[in-house]
Structure formats: C-alpha cells, structure tokens
Length: 133
Image (cartoon, rainbow, N blue to C red; front, side, top):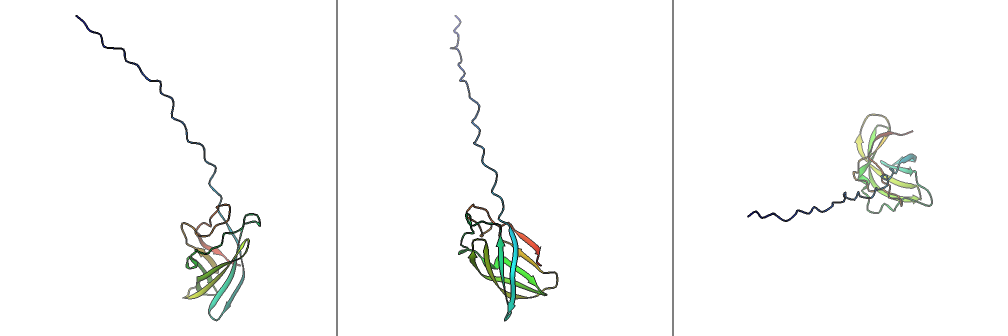
C-alpha cells in the first residue's frame, strides 16, 4: 500500500519592505571667513564666521575643544585656548602661541566628529590649511 505525503503548502512571501528613504545628509556648516585677527601679548584673537542665519544660529560651543583649532599667522603657529559665541554666525577664538612655523597664513580645524554645529544639525567639517587673508 502506498501512502501519499500530505501536500506541501508554501507561504506566499512578500518582498521585504524597503526602509524609508532618509533625506540627504545634512550639508556641512561652512567657515566663510575669519575677521578681526589681532595679536597681543603673544596671544591671537580672531572671529570665525559661518554660513548660518538668524533663524538657525550656531549652537553655543560650551563643550567644544578649542585646541582643535589652529592658526598659522606671521610665522607663528597659534593653538586655540577658548571659544565663545558672539553672534548668530560668529565664534570668537582665543589662541596661545605654539611656536614658530614658517608658511602662509592658514586656519585648520581637526575635530572629527565636529563639536561645532548650528540648530539645523549641520557640523563643521575638518579644515586643513584654509588660506587666510
């Protein structure tokens, strides 16, 4: 006597749902200028200007590490010691001398990930030797 196996039922599998498309990554928060550069008593002071608006200002840089900023100016390398927000689009950077260093006037920012942002969630990318006026 021959016994037949019960019929095999296949479940209809639906294609996996695609994850919702996330929006494009937030654009970078760009340093647009460095103004009011001055050197007094071996310290450099400068205002860093960013592409923000009054409606979407910079976030207070309370936890930011100023030593991640450096400026080479007039043959001296200066390293950040303090950073404060002075306007919706401006941070004031105080720097101490790090010694002599030949080369053109430049600014660099090495934080990765960045600790400077605006209210849109944009962050400053790494900056390597951006020329200064």
